Length: 441
Ligand code: ADP
Image (cartoon, rainbow, N blue to C red; front, side):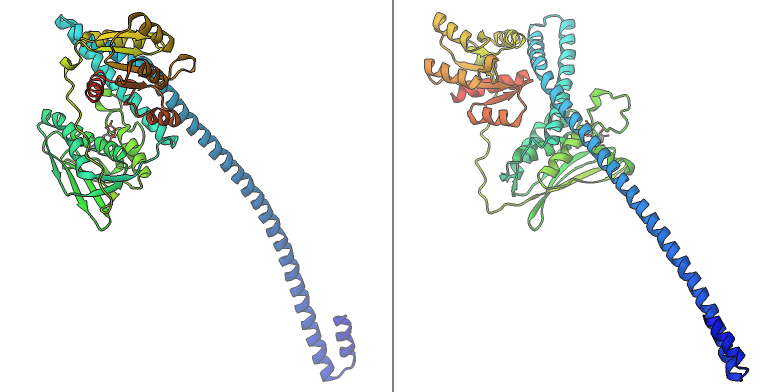
């Protein structure tokens, strides 16, 4: 149409006609160029939209794949935690029986050779027990089965207790362990604080050949900083994150068990998270390492009574004592009887409540202590057994031994108010608990 008008204007033969015809032609060319560009743009935007739709679809697919992979990873993680919990739980019973037999063997060992073998068995059992306990700790922490019980805690008392426990280990290596004290009441879970300190101090002593291990307390505005510092071998920068992973150890590719298990710091990291802190690490190769964390100060809260000192486990306190053992595991019954007899006790063993009733009716023994498994066969519980025995015999002291790890079962056991031991029980811990129960009762 524009070209037709241009031709018409050209036909007028006037100067204006020529100018208008040229302008119309230029205009026509511009419009056609513009139209072409527009067409290209529309086409490109169509392509872009198409491409975008494809990308969105691809992204959706990838998102689904990521979600699937995350689900798989979570399932694998949960399966691992369940496996660890089940394995460590099932290992506790035979390990408990083994500890009892091993301690009895040590007491009966007359020849040097048997004593040597018995020492080796004892050491192997200790590391196995430590491994099972650490696995159980990790699985309980992963399963969120540990909930901190926050209270006012005398931090110095906790530190002093842990340092005192490690005194002999430090002395064997000629190490000086020093506390830089301050009196601070903190708001935390004392058991969990104890676990963190134990692991850090244990490492500080283990990885320091000479010099000093220092536990310093530094009050900040509303927090207390606790530092465990050593003059040991130090930790290379590249390893400082990885050592907090499970089973990660520096320079123990042969997995020599005497060099630890590689679980201590993994436990520390989880507990620190649980009590709302984070452990920081600085280190210098050949000069030492420094682990630090914070706990909130709780100066306005009263500190609960300091722990009563537990009585020394004195063998003679057990001699001549009459103890009834109720446990549904035959191996544990035999192991307990042998060990208690070796300590000079008269041990009466029963598999359950019925057995115990018969024994009481037939022999009418005078009992000094009841040691009972928390979970007995046929749905019977150790707490019921203690209640029934006490109804018949009066307030006999009692100890509950449990291989249970499920938090609700443990809460039930704790609610009974009876002193509780966790399988596998180290023979020395059993002896101390027996002495303590009888001296209180
Ligand atoms: P474990 O001590 O049983 O091997 P941990 O998880 O407690 O396991 O520690 C992991 C690794 O970190 C150790 O194997 C050790 O190499 C290193 N490590 C931990 N604490 C220290 C320390 N204070 N000094 C030097 N190395 C350390």
